Length: 79
Image (cartoon, rainbow, N blue to C red; front, side, top):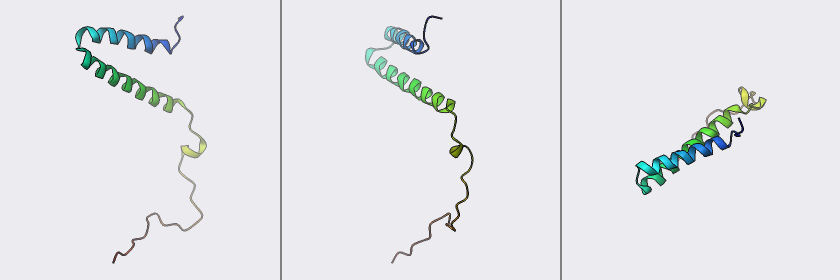
């Protein structure tokens, strides 16, 4: 395994670009590859977000506040 993990998606993109270029017109291929890149970036963001350990403040519910704050704002009469 001489390849690093970062090089694998690059090789996949290069191969996909070659294969798509053979079948699809150039205008459509550029849009297709842009959409593919957006999809991969989105999946990467989801994986990275899910792999980070959550801080203790965001894991559970918030601690109840000491004030008697209403959950909903009061209605304001409009004249």
